[in-house]
Image (tube, rainbow, N blue to C red; front, side, top):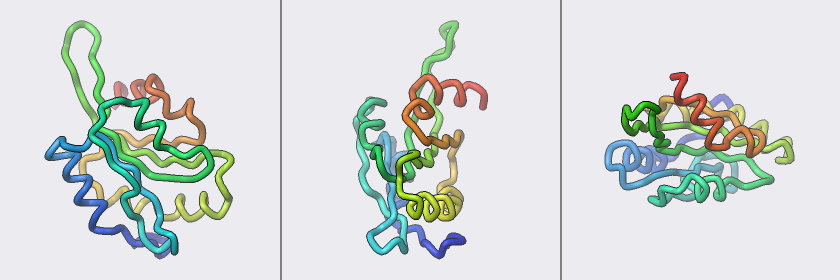
Length: 139
């Protein structure tokens, strides 16, 4: 349970394990339920496209997300992947939503073991492929 009193549903961890271990899921979008008491899975996809992942992030509301980020190392060293956690809080989201999401993030983040990179996004430039790649290469 988070500082805000928001719980993490079991469905969140089950979906994360499918992404992490089964590789059957490429990304997961999480959101608060209608009563703002629990974090639930909003959507998940096996589509490998980073653009399709970004299209799932709403322009006017907050979300959490996990993406299995794949990239190629220069010099022919091969492909790598890192699991990235996103805290999406766009500037034009309602203030109440931003506050609840910010105070609930740690509960979800702590329940997901195996996150390599954490991304805080307030606009799409901060979650662009190149921005995430830069962070992934530094870790």
